[in-house]
Length: 462
Ligand SMILES: Cc1cc2nc3c(=O)[nH]c(=O)nc-3n(C[C@H](O)[C@H](O)[C@H](O)COP(=O)(O)OP(=O)(O)OC[C@H]3O[C@@H](n4cnc5c(N)ncnc54)[C@H](O)[C@@H]3O)c2cc1C
Image (cartoon, rainbow, N blue to C red; front, top):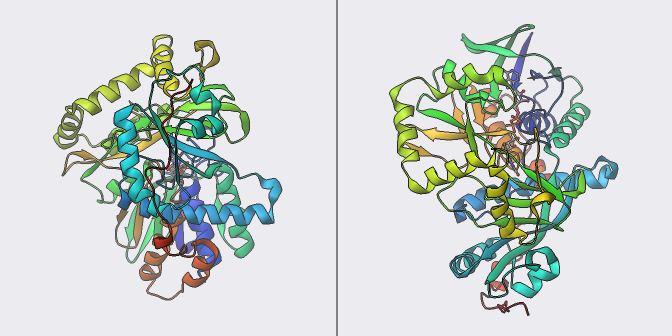
């Protein structure tokens, strides 16, 4: 069987692309191959990630440039979710809660206040609030806290908590409505891809499939497949598993803490669970593991193939971990997963958000949390923030650590433009319709939005 396009991987990235191709292009011959028996079972599953639609407003390790890019993509997912809610309210793809980033102590407060100037311009709904308002939204942040401690927060009502696994199913359902002729190969694993003249042959455990163009959205496996075709040789993966601790409902919304700028992971946060708001999840931690997929020991050898057995990635790891901040962070995070001592240490992080929480209120969440394929650039010997896209000859590889779920439609948009080129412009992409459906119209002139950094009073709690 030969297709114009074959997508490898049925997580939120692959299914977002499938939907985009079916609704917004006239390509009809499309196949999607997924090795598990359902979509969104790996990192996109609701049990594997933090369920946050990241816009860049409360992620304090994002630069303004990064936030602008992520916001455009997250807006697309937000619009898709809101449109679906109107059409299928019973589907429950997301819940909407308040969302804030909390600064504790003078140093963090000063940093956050400064950050608010440019970020308040980019995110007009973001408000800066002081202690009283924080306590009104999240009473448990103040309960049991030292009254002298300075607090400041940036808050927004747009706290989208998303079941990205369910979103993958929604994309597939709507793709099928637009183009019933697509082929979905579940329980089919791609074992090898090779170039076959002007097209590609994909060898699977169920037989061979040919494609004029291929998009690999296989999460951390994407780099392994890229390397087998001679691409991405200068990259390795640091597989950073993330665990969570869960407790009762102590927060009304998402509360993020301030992150150190050089760390490419979200700082510990507390979030309501999308499918049960009575559970609060704290995390994720960030511990290196030697698997491409968490809880799947058969990916051990694949991990090392992806890492690359040579001196270059080892030198990169040594350079990265020689940074004191990164080393201490990694060490602390390894300890978080150790029974007993881990919980006691992690409790200190949780108490930055909920000071009065008791040790017996939280417990380690078993088999919750996937692993993020953080990119190591072996040329710069640095850890890169966010996703990577490797573009080859009529083939693209998407490697998707956080915020890969939030940027799924943005990625699909970029890949669709590229696909038109790959297929010799024989097909068309209805960008106008895509933008009408999924891209926010420009907001009212920014001039009217005054960012006042003096608004909140810093009160002590009496
Ligand atoms: C702890 C943690 C917290 C996170 N929090 C957030 C968050 O709050 N917000 C956010 O936006 N992102 C978050 N992320 C990142 C997010 O989960 C991922 O970026 C996103 O799910 C990636 O989707 P994907 O479809 O690219 O990959 P995946 O969901 O991993 O899907 C890849 C698919 O490819 C399939 N596959 C792999 N190899 C093959 C093969 N050889 N043949 C056939 N199929 C194959 C897999 O089975 C899988 O279904 C988090 C990640 C972790 C681990």
